[in-house]
Image (cartoon, rainbow, N blue to C red; front, side, top):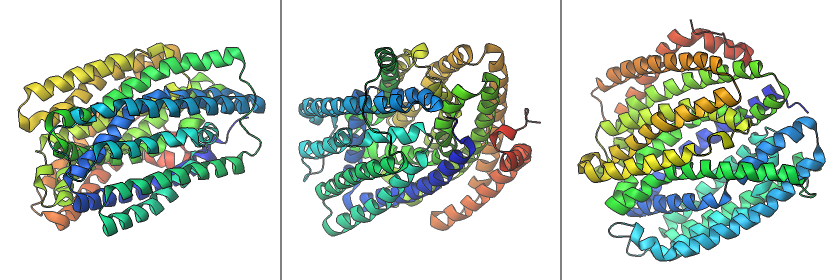
Length: 514
């Protein structure tokens, strides 16, 4: 069965846009409310728990990704019995995973206090709070989260996204009400757990509504199960490297510098995460379609689609980078208000924008690599990358002056991506799927995008920093100016591409820039 790539992409983009805008708004409202009512220590503690549990989810090993990728071929062949067998296998695995995560969390309890530098809030029981977080993380594995794989494999991420949007809105209202009325972190977490349970029930309901004939039953043939388990071993290494790279920052900062520094870094980091919603909207909406096209289209057609998506994601990333660079400090200053201990100097947002651009520039390639199930070919890449990241992170924390320690943490991620991750993963995709000659066209396109990004970001930043206004009105004026300048420059460089995508879609993109 060949999926309706364009129609599914449109659904995913619309649902994703609504979800990202809603999530972005509610996230900043929630974080601001949390900071005002609970304080920086509790905010840092919440980030600390999130990072610790992010490490524990390594127990998932990568089964979700492996199962979804394994479903692409039977969906293309319309092999319903094999799809059901994969779903049954996935449910069994997830129940084991949930048990392992919970047990590992219990073993971690005695070590918690040693991972937090300095004081914790006086009325906070570190161990009880962690157990609530642990329960919230593990419960989905025992319930119906596994059924989301059916929707993802059929490129119907819009259904899952719509569920998340509804949950975000109602949960925000409930959490805000609890914070206003009680200012109690325990009650706040209980509300979070209740909505995790509700989300699982909605996933079960919607997956049954769209695919009533796909039920968890049957047995996966031994050779196919072996392929999944082989992929899982490789995906686990990718997950391990990703978790270490993404979650180690808060743990290291907490252990060496304390919860307030974690909260400050979290503010800058979350702005970067929030900005990623726009380019992420494109490649996440296409991910299931990539897997289907790899099994139904020629490699040349796939390469043209790959370049087109890389280019449109690159254009969006350039605009986001320019806006971030121009507004990072004014936004943070307005956001934290009187808590100026949460502000960092100018180098911090510059490095964060550079990290953002580099990370987003590789995401389309990673999505294609995932769709092609190229896990074993570079399974040691994330391990090497995480070792480099951890070493550099600790080195910079130790040797850099106090003022630049957070910058050192960001710089360690940039070096890891540039020196390890990107060269390695690009080599794999252009030897195991595409061919080496095509890599020249890809790198030429990426180099042009980076040069244009540097020019647009520099001009936009220079123009907005010249505006002397501060506070909320200064932020608004700078936002309008930055949007106009970056928008005009992007239209100047990419008008042909933008028109083509608007009228013909990704496959109608011109073959060259100029």
